[in-house]
Image (cartoon, rainbow, N blue to C red; front, side, top):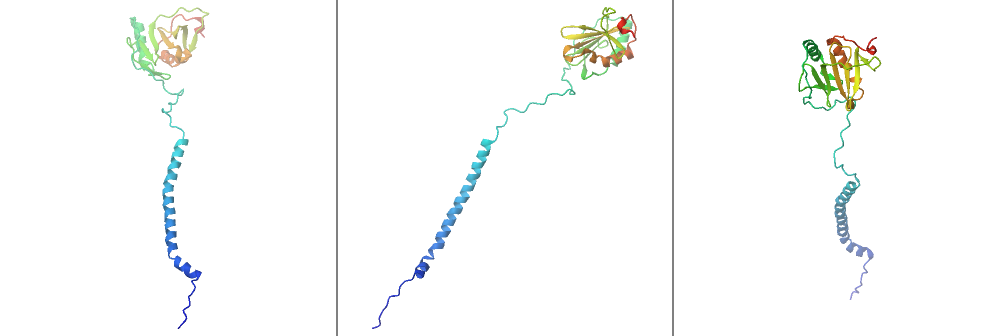
Length: 214
């Protein structure tokens, strides 16, 4: 009788038997890791966005304030008629005043001309608050030692009121009075362009004080 002998199982054989299962496990592990990574990426991105929003400064509740007007910016002003009196004038002053009013500039510095409620042939107004011009009134009484100012060849006398400086010509055939609101600062600077028109349209004359001669 032939002798039956047992063949021992080697380690390599055992490894070969177990080998078919390893790739399956590896693929399962890699798939799980890939899924976890794909899930984690959007979460990480969302957390980053939320953190950025939290750290970002809040948007201002109101729009930024508009820049302040510059010195060269035009003044905002009303276009409503300015209330002025229009006393009756004699024929000669009325003629002179009409000539003056017809030649006044449309603006005085940065003040635009406005309509008046009465006497557009002898009254004018500019800006808001209104700088006013009245032609044909009476000259003030001025002494030889009182202060007077010559601006563009026109002699002016200044009288101070609570809210304005009133400038009146002293060397013209027909007097011209300009009332400058105090908020406009130095009053004489506002009569400079008006003086040029007065020289061109209102003849000089009358008994002027010593300070206007020269």
